[in-house]
Image 1 (cartoon, rainbow, N blue to C red):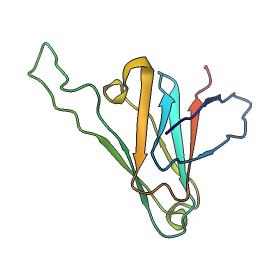
Image 2 (spheres, rainbow, N blue to C red):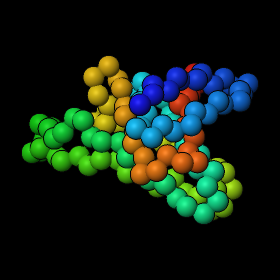
Image 3 (cartoon, helix red, strand yellow):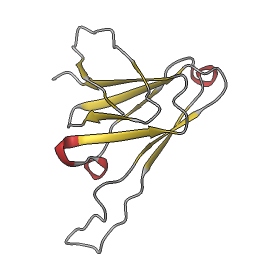
Image 4 (cartoon, helix red, strand yellow):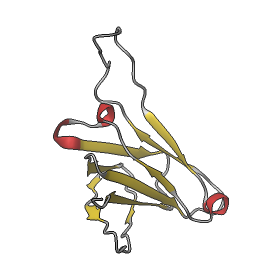
Length: 121
């Protein structure tokens, strides 16, 4: 399992660097301006990415406990997207101590991942 470094994206633009998904999964440091981009180079087979919930149940003063589910994302095959990939952010309910998020894959083959910090306004 590898910790993927966060890249700062500027308003001027920058080429993102992608890391091959690891068989045992990957981690990254989450935050309010962090987004994840996953590409699937497989021409016909979609992949599944899972982020386990770590802070459950969610309790509020207005309601009883709310059960939170794992995040399960389908990373569509290249032919279906034209290599656009999947963008997403991760809520605090799926972020462990130290702001660490763990991602696992049903199959890491052909997946690459970039973790980016959105530019300031």
